Structures are given as structure tokens and as C-alpha cells.
Length: 305
Ligand code: NCD
Image (tube, rainbow, N blue to C red):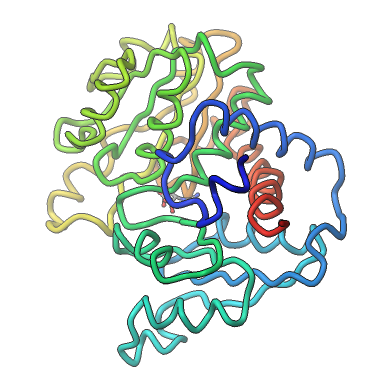
């Protein structure tokens, strides 16, 4: 079922029903039981990263190696023929001859969708401009499910740059399949985009938009903090004005419930004070670990017939 439905790859969180999410969470949990295997022996993954990445690329590559497969790719536009003016379509029609699955990150919102249109092999969207980042959202759900024990009945705050942050777009779409209360916390300039809000309204998701996180800190189960996306601002002065707007500090932890957990897709700039890191409530480095079992599960589903 999953394999059939996702034959073209993972492009958007909107492809996932609750059933698909539960299935892939279960598969990721199974993947977590063994470190290495030979499931993808003989298969080749291509990672095409036209934008910077640490966790996403390295965890996809590590996951592929841990499943016995191999990896090829390039990690910035300037080392490929894109620099010479080659189109995304031509790049994909070339790389599909050399690999069994392509992971792509690009600054254009439609890049992964376009890649999937041209490719005969599965495409995985590893971040498309300020649009979406579905595999990050899946690993975020895995983190919450494993560390809190459930995805239903939670009060979840998504905070920071909700306009340009692609991880919160995908995460709110996936969360809309569960029984949660979502608090969107941002300066008014960086609110969720209308199209994302429309989608949530259609799904009758319970949400509130607020600017001051302190007002609801004591009721949250999860706070998902994000970086202000400097590279997406047309006006650098606006970025400078907004960049320090939220800083989660050690004192804030005192207001939170015992089972409260703080997540962040990383990289963190100044929005979480480093002395929060040692708290057991701060689980953003654990969250980076969950990228491995989730990406192992996705790669196995997409590449094994
Ligand atoms: C995020 C991204 O690239 O969208 N990072 C990630 O993949 N873990 C978040 C960000 O860059 O702020």
C-alpha cells in the first residue's frame, strides 16, 4: 500500500494520511532495533543539495550506508553543471540513470515537484525553498511519539519563523491528522501563510495564533522552536529588526510542565540559550538522532520492490 502510493517519492506532507504516518512510524521503530543491515545492498542513493545542509544530508547518507547501500551526489550548486546553466529537469534526467532514488534540496519551492515530474525513480524532497520539508516533519513526529508516548491529546506550540520556515509548514500538515491543539507563536510579520491556515481550517484543526509564548508556556506539552530564516528575507533590515525576537532561556523552563519537551529542527542561532541544552526537557539533539531510523524506513520503502 505505502510503496504503491509513494512510488513517485515523498514530495509533500499532504500525501500522508494518518494511516501512512502510523505505518512509517512503525517501520522507523523497527529500523531502530538494528543498527546495520544489508537491506539496500546494491542500491544507489543520489543526494543533490543545492542549499546548505548538515543533518538532513548526513542522516540520509548515514541511513543509506547503514542499510548496506551506496551514495553519490553533490552538495552545492557550484560543483555541478547547474552552475553552467543546466536545468533541474535535465539534471534529474541524468542522475536517474546513475541511482535508484534521488534526495533533493533546492531554494525553489516547486523544485521537488518538478523533479518528480521528470524522474522515473522516487524523489525525496529534502527542503524546497520556504515551502516544505516533509521528512523532517516525519522525524519530528517520531521524536514526539517516542519521547512523549503519543501524538494525540497534546498542546503543541510552533514558534519563530512560521512564514518562511518549511519545517513548520510540513509539521502542521502532519499534525492536522491527529487530535492536537496547535499554538502558532510568531511576530505578526512571520505568521503562518494564508494557504497553510486555509488547509488547517478545512481540516478543522484546533489552533490559535499568538505572539507571546509566555502566556501559554505552562500548558504546552511540546514547544517546537525554529530559526528566523535569514536567507529568505527580501529586506535585510527587516531580518535585523526581527532576528532576536524570541530567546528561550533557562528561566522559561521553570514555567513548563514536568513532561514538557523542547524541540528544534536545528540549526539554532540565538533562539535557545545554550544553558537550556542540559535540561532533560531539551531534546533537539535526540531529535537529530531520530533522522536515522525515519530515513532508513523511508529509503527502504521507496527502494525495495
Ligand atoms: C531546517 C531546514 O533546512 O529547513 N533544517 C533541517 O533540515 N534540519 C531548518 C532551518 O534551516 O532552519
